[in-house]
Image (cartoon, helix red, strand yellow):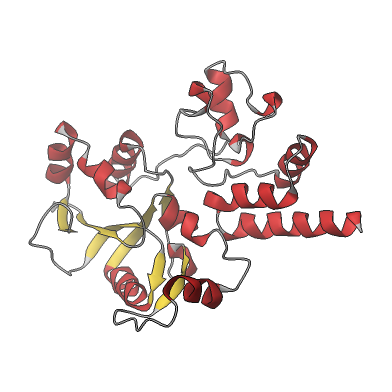
Length: 262
């Protein structure tokens, strides 16, 4: 049997997920041996635009050129996997997606400068434009989780990712709850998988692993307001990594809170 044909691609982001794949070190040889990597610009020069069994895509989509490239990848791939927070949920560059005003913000940065490259779009996650079969969360992804996912995909099985929040990992490590100390922590809304690395060093979770499957946005919002944070601050911090859907929920709670105070 021929090896599965794989492509690894990057769009708008820090390229941290691709670097994490390269950081697999001794396991990288096994990875390249198990699959036929046809395209991976960060690791090889003889890249090919051919039919793929699996395409791994990092980064959000923020230009028309990127969108056309993404559609081309989708047309050639049997399975498309979004890797990392930017590809899965849009990342920090998409935190204002529900607020509108993209043109005004864009002009505030570039003014009347003539842009010679591809026309810019407001950054959105990959699944806003094409079908995505699987999401591997992380900022950046965890290399062990990635290798485990690849091995299962190659074997025709569906990888398993945690569906519960970072708080569960905190309890496993017997960490004291940072929220109860009055600090802003996004752990209850954030997908587990990072090993609660920040709270384990007494640093509040910022939500970089993306939203957990069972969200209780209302409870988190209410708790943080009771801790003295403003509605605007809660919305801004929670939406930094969580994507458009959570941003919409947060904005709704913020507007409801404002109406109640009138």
